Image (tube, rainbow, N blue to C red; front, side, top):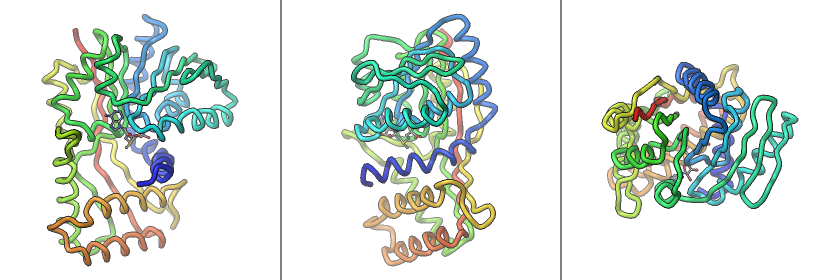
Length: 306
Ligand SMILES: C[S@@+](CC[C@H](N)C(=O)[O-])C[C@H]1O[C@@H](n2cnc3c(N)ncnc32)[C@H](O)[C@@H]1O
């Protein structure tokens, strides 16, 4: 996917995520951050795989953050470089002060919180190893399913202070559903192999992905002694309400179908003519306002109890 396409995908995903996030988990996060912010200020928060910064704006829109030093980190240079522009235009529409204080240093002042923002272009695991520092809050939104959780969770836990908080949202959990049905046997096999491709993904020779990250997080967190304060589903549900999709969600759906197509083209177990036909039909359904898409995901709030 081209860099600009990926940024457009993240922009189109924002409203889908807004609807999907589990409110019980979100509200527990809000309550927990209020209490933590009252006993320590400023809090130190690290957001990993932050993309262009949509989660930060979501948190500020809901007055969720107390005063904090907030680190926005992503391994994709184009995504993270787009963050200041995205945050500045968000701040301008809200009449909120967004100031630059040096390369990669910014501040955001809302009526209820002062955020000192630092932006990093880095791999999370290199960053954690190299930084001699600990965090009070670690946030990972739509990113944990890209990691090998058995090594990622211990590494992230080691980066947290005692009683540090982990908020992991939009963790894929194995089910992608499209309606209305077309060629159901082909699609079932396609999505099965698509999930398998996530499980088999390697990065630098190491496992890197879990198509059932959501359900597996229960045991990975427990194995690390992390107390689960709240958990719940956060399924994407994208549908054309009155014949049209909301916001840029038609574009979001096109990206989803393109992603599946690109991953599965040339797969030895997939009939390529059928894949081409399936892709065209699903895309026509988007253009005609017929496609419904449901993707099962889970959100978690955990606390390091040491
Ligand atoms: C699906 S995107 C989600 C981005 C953002 N959280 C959002 O929802 O808008 C996953 C992000 O994780 C980043 N990422 C993947 N592996 C990473 C790693 N090892 N360290 C840091 N970021 C990583 C990618 O570059 C990408 O921006």
